[in-house]
Length: 396
Image (cartoon, rainbow, N blue to C red):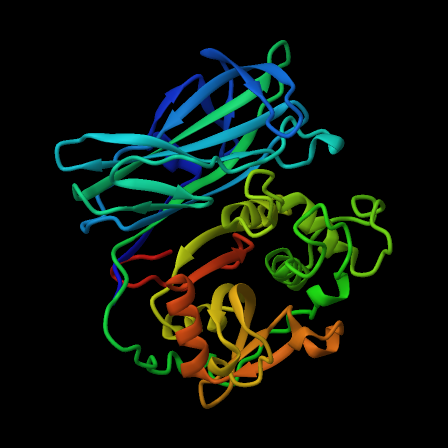
């Protein structure tokens, strides 16, 4: 199976890193003393502002295998005039390496008080690694054997407000498995026949809505899936937050699409931007990889639905009725035989929330997921709902 680990810092674990102007207040990392300034030009508008900065740097982590890919995650709030930047450095055995920006992020758009237009950073590459929107991908060459995160907190110079970060982490994986895919064994009996009551929302209902944010509904699989999981946990934007949406049909989906939109990628599918959005509603959320549906079943047994990234041709997933090069769905349960009960926001390309629930063949869905994204999922849950026990090589 593929090597996968997930490491995160939260609460007292912030003490493991190096603080430069940052401190922990009520479990959240905050900016307490400015240690530098930065002039930043917001790309979509070209305006430049000056910000005070402080940083936190993680210890160096050696996962025990050669690094093929890395995806960072963070949970934070950024009051008006503040934002954050996450960077990662992957290191060779002789400790040489380069820093890459994994995201520049604010909770809200500038029109709603956000300091910047959130964005990934294109055109970052060395001879041995590159960043593809939200994922650091290695190119071979020197073996990258360890990694390190740097978090910069920024506030507009002359103010005293601060971002508050409650989680920072990264999923690191080795090369993908080779050879023919084999269906996984059934997971815990407690997951069989269990279907979590995740509300159904169709992205197709929003076709044509606000096309400036990723084509207007037709491409909103990720924010629609996140909106469904937020609704499952009984949270999400208030009516006041969605008052700008017209027509006001399932307005939480439009809100999510706007607030996860990556202005450099020009799309709403940036993985950590979606989990960061979920976290603003009091949940813990991060991106990781699972190795099989057997692992996914442990989450369902624990009462936690998952958002999974898949891709397939129409002939490869019976009953879907379409093809996709990349799509997000919600895994909400399993039949007694182990087939997968999902909320598919593409809903057979029918604009109807009643078409969203589907049951997909276990082997077909697992192949579409593991082949398509290597098993990427969004894990979104209240801290009061514990995650299942992780395997020996902990992916969560």
